[in-house]
Image (cartoon, rainbow, N blue to C red):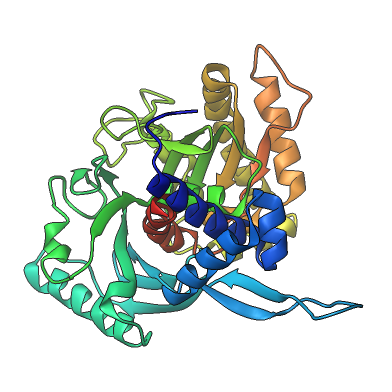
Length: 374
């Protein structure tokens, strides 16, 4: 036994263990908590009283019983604290609140054209404040505000380190936080989507997450954690060169994966994904041909990544809701055809993330930090 462990450490450990056990199990009785944690009933009772007093847990009905008194069910209070996720896009701002379980409890979408002006940042911040006020909570219940952006961010979330699509390189989160009395972070939108994927699934482990939206983005997941890399630009697969003589990318280079494997690369001017896939599923030859070419280019890139990382792939982003198992089967075949080490095992999967995965993922880090402190 560690002689440095104090009685206060043990008490805090019991407090933490009981909260996390309830968090993981939903509802438990006092006796079930005592049995699973090997604690005495008085110890469990003392901690439940404290947790309830702090509004972290609540009584949630009673368990059925064929004999004797029915046991009280205890559960966490999911809205004891909330976190805000904000997705910044060219013409819209999506604001969303999640509870401690990561469930979206309210959302709002604003039509607001991005401008690198103080008036824009102030207007967005004021909209966030109005949104929070509508939740009927106190300021202390807000864990923080995460801003999902189309750009790379510093590991501490304080600065845009690479922004060529929308928000400029070098922009600091102070442009928002000066108006907001909460912790604020910038987060790369693709990594936000991957964070949500990790949250809703417990079977990932290691994977490469590809967010195929208007633009392409990626994230590497190692040991159920987003790997950021030394300077925060790990998994920027969108700028991996596929063809040095290919189309010009917004980064200034030619033939990046972005120019072959994004929705911008797939669709022609004025097209929508709805219309495109309606034509593909209807067997319109020109659309089927274009879709197959898109899958060919995607398979080329995925084979290169698979040779280096040898990990599962998860395909998310706007395109994921249109994908069918047949598309994944074809993508497997095309990737294996290009590989020196074809695999018979399934290694490409469709994302399980909800439609609002990006703003949810922007809010999750604050919830995770809160859970880590209990």
